[in-house]
Image 1 (cartoon, helix red, strand yellow):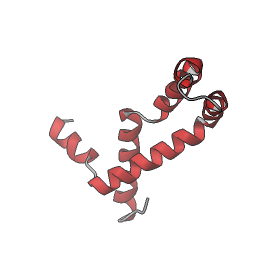
Image 2 (cartoon, one colour):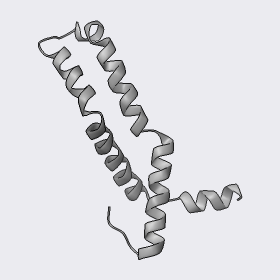
Image 3 (tube, helix red, strand yellow):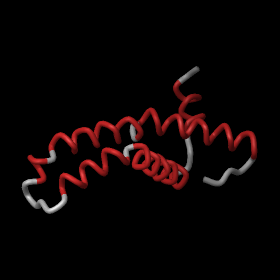
Image 4 (tube, helix red, strand yellow):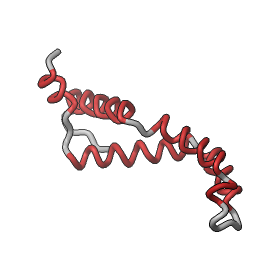
Length: 93
């Protein structure tokens, strides 16, 4: 498959991409809720010291979030959207 053809297949409108990104972020936060809670508990009552006191929790949270919010996940969501759109006409997100 050529680059141009692949680009056309994966192309979605800007509004659709923004909606997919939002959906991706919501899913990531839901999936990483355990790490979010750990970080929030560590940060509770802290100001500047949160940077070094909660470094491990922040790293774990970021690693978890990255699993669900990266370019490959977004591309997969775009492909799914395009398949649904081709099969059903117009799809709402």
